[in-house]
Length: 405
Ligand SMILES: Nc1ncnc2c1ncn2[C@@H]1O[C@H](COP(=O)(O)OP(=O)(O)O)[C@@H](O)[C@H]1O
Ligand SMILES: [Mg+2]
Image (cartoon, rainbow, N blue to C red; front, top):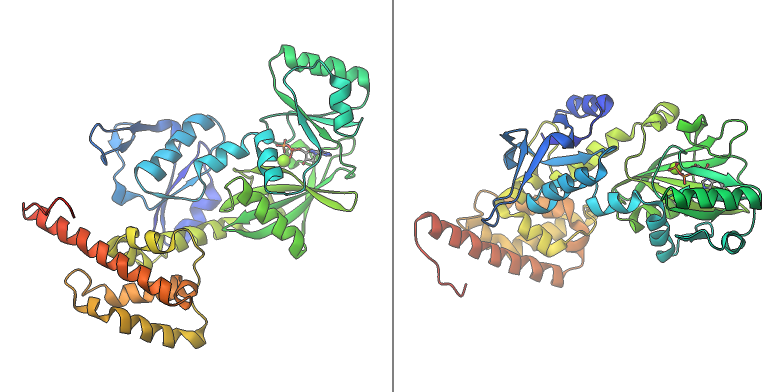
C-alpha cells in the first residue's frame, strides 16, 4: 500500500476512488494549507499541515494537481521532492515551464519539435514586422499564462492587431504572436504518462470559434495516433520535463503536426469522452516508482528502504526499468548469485538478499543484461552501502568511525 497525497484545491474524487479501490491510502490536501519549514540543522526540514507535522513515514508519493497559486504549490512540490525525498508524479521545474506558453515553446523548439512560427516582443513598436514574421494575418495572440482558451485571440486586420497590441502593452500583459494554423477549429489532446501516450482525443471548436478547448465550448472524440505522432507527443512532454504526466496539445495543418502547448495539470473530461481512465495509469506509475502495490509492501519498496534508495539510484539513476526476457532470467539470476551470494550471509542483507535479487531482476533486467560494468557498479554500491550501515550501527552504539571513511 502506498500513502499518497494529492496536492490540489479541488476534490479529485475519481482519482481518490481509484486509488482506494486499489488498496492505497490517499488524501487530497490543498497546498495552501501546508507550511514549509527549513531547519538550521541539515536534514531536518519539515512540512506541516496547519500545525500538524506530516511525517515521512506517512507519505510515499505526491500527485501535484495544482491549479491556483502555482508559485506556492511549486514550493510545496520542491519541498516534498528535494528536501524530504518523496516521489512526485511531476517535477516542479516541469510544471513551472509548462505554466508559461512561450517558455514551453522555447523548450519545444530547442528539442527540435515542430511548433508554429512564434514571436515574443515586449513593446508593440513594430507590430507589422512582428506579424510579417509569423506569416501575416490572420495571426494568433496568446498571453503567456492562461488555459481553456482564455488569453488566446486572433488578429484579422492590421488595425485590430495594432490597437490590441497597444492595449496589452498598457495593461502590462505579455503576449506572443503565433502563426495561425489552418486547422478548421480542430486540435488533438494527448495524455502522456510515464513516457507513453495513454489516450488521445480530437477536439472540435464550437461554431464561430477557432479554439478547440472543451472549456471554450468544443467537443471531443477518441482517436488513435500514429506511432510518429505518439513519439512527438512523448518527446514534447519530455522536453519540458513532464514526460511523467502531461496533456500535450497538437494541431494538424498543412499536412504537418505542430505542438502548441503542454499542460502540467490536464483536465479529466478526456476520461468521460474516451472511456480511458488515465487515473489508473497515474496510480500504476506511483506503484512502479514506490514499489508498493495496493495490498502488499512490494519487493522494490523493501529493497529501497532496506538496502537504500542510494544503492539503486547510484547504479541506475533514472534509467528505464524493465524485467529481462524470461529466457534470460535464469541465467542472470545465477550470475547475480555468483557475484553477490556472499551478501546473503552479510549481517545487513541476510534477510533482504532474496528481495534485493528479485528487485534487480524485476526492475533492472535490461541493465543487468549489459553485464560486467553493471555488476561492478552494483558491487561497489553494495560495498559503499555496507560501509554506511556499519557507520550507522557504530553511531547507534555511541562509537565514532574513523573520519576518513
Ligand atoms: N497557432 C494556432 N493556430 C490555430 N489555432 C490555434 C493556435 N494556437 C492555439 N490554437 C487553438 O486555440 C486553442 C487554445 O490554445 P492553447 O495554446 O492550447 O491555449 P490554452 O492554454 O488556452 O488551451 C487550441 O486548442 C487550438 O484549438
Ligand atoms: Mg490548450
